[in-house]
Length: 110
Image (tube, rainbow, N blue to C red; front, side, top):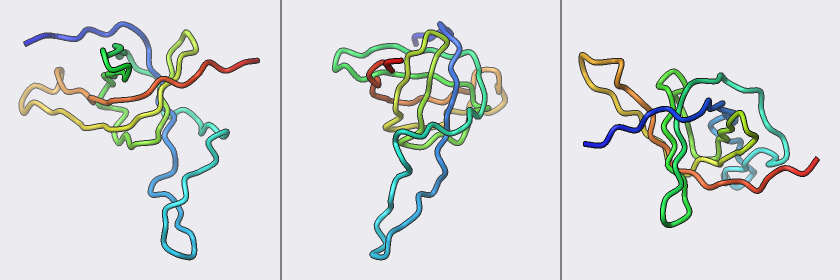
């Protein structure tokens, strides 16, 4: 079993969930140009996969993490979460983590 060590500090920008719904009951995502306040910053890891998606490992204190949430690092890189799940090991909370799959966002231009 491989161990993924923290290689950066990750900040979670969680959107309001569940999303509001329109008159037809269809979920309406929030404005993509508005980044919510950060929920917190924790040690984590971000590894690019061969299919160009990213595998993120977040501290369990960041839970819940939902698709559409944004994760950023200290270097200014950001990712949009596509899937996330909380891994817990009964009796060993030190090894709990959140595994997320994400896509890298284009860099912000000042």
